[in-house]
Amino acid sequence: MMQRRLEPELMNGDAQVQAYAAADFSAGDQATLEAIQQLLFTTSPLPADPLLVDLGCGPGNITLRLAELFPRARIIGIDGAESMLALARGRAQQQQLEISFLCQTLQEVLEGPLLGQADLIVSNSLLHHLHQPDLLWTVSRALAAPGCRALHRDLRRPASDAELEQLRLKHLPSAPEVLQHDFAASLAAAFEPHEVTAELHRLGLNQLRVSAEDDRYLVVSGLVKS
Image 1 (spheres, rainbow, N blue to C red):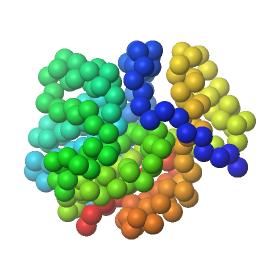
Image 2 (image 1 turned 135 degrees about the vertical axis):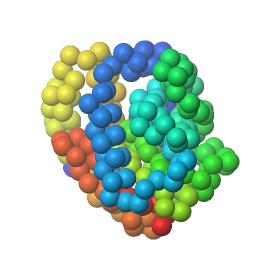
Image 3 (image 1 turned 90 degrees about the vertical axis):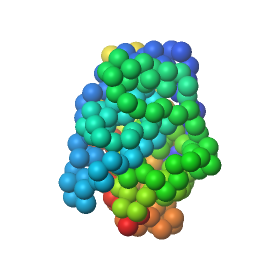
Image 4 (image 1 turned 45 degrees about the vertical axis):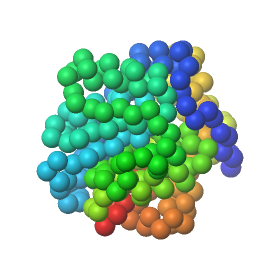
């Protein structure tokens, strides 16, 4: 069984920002949006003017789609890398979308003004970056208003380096080197579903469910606060 290997928490190098800006993540983004829609379909409707928070929003791929999907919502994207947020703000301006982007760490979110207000909390490929992964669940609980739902989609760790290499060759055979390197590092830093389930139970977040998706993802979804 492969042990978890940490990677840097922030992606803010120029080469990384440019590579991620140019990459096509539309299939994964669409899968995340469909998972969010399925979650909302199986739970009670959002309030008329909900607050949606995208944690670790990066260049805004999911944040912008949320703004299109929920035009009456107040939407906030949060990331610790200002270089990624600059790209997100530019995209939102081009598309004339009303989105607030905040440069904050998760620890800073815990000390901010949004506590107890969020109706939907999402993240896409954030968990594996965290050196203190329980922060994601602590922040989710702190941000949640009554009835808040959460959808966190992330990579899951393969069983061995050989399996990791197979996944890299299968999914990114001709991608730029920086993306191939980051993909491999992210897989090694990711969690297995049973590890996430144990952490959620330890923190009392028993209404969040963990499921495996295809050959490399896991999804955490459900109610944060009844």
